[in-house]
Length: 261
Image (cartoon, rainbow, N blue to C red):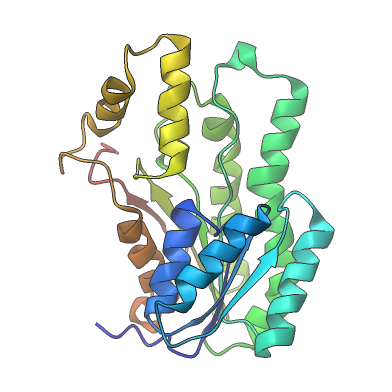
């Protein structure tokens, strides 16, 4: 299916790896011009080179720390300077530290809020005028199924990510009909984040081995496995496209059917 985003300009945050990178790849494969960002400049350069070989669009890599509002402003400015506008914004961010309530300091809570909520707020604030000038403006926020069903030992993610859903639902009403705003709620996918969480579980003694921990993430998934990042990326590309032109204000789980609600 041709999604019709060829030639559009898409900015994907936290996209040098993981689900952000997969989303950028799916959009690039459809012919969009893609802007990717990350803090690790070496990894960002590698990601940019990878994406340049995927589609017919151009790829721009911009170093950025999503907890720094000045970096975010510079990121959006670089996007518009390079391509003359912005059609699609995809917000993503790395996960906060894992652990229980008693493990977390006030600094951990403030840090998680800046990383997960304020990074989205600041990026939307900078991108808003450009998206409203587009004939196809969209915002898609990548969050987590933890906003619906909490995940053990992810107290920060469980709590703070819900703020992104409130933002999405509010903006879907405030920005319509000029800009559609949606969220995707990924379950476990084959990313370095899941590897990190499994490693944390092994260190805590929650599981005896890495293999056991990884198998635990697919328990209860009717599809019998965790997701491939490209499956999430393709969902993001679809929501950004005119094929989803009447989808607005949704929070779509991409979890193989694991959530029961």
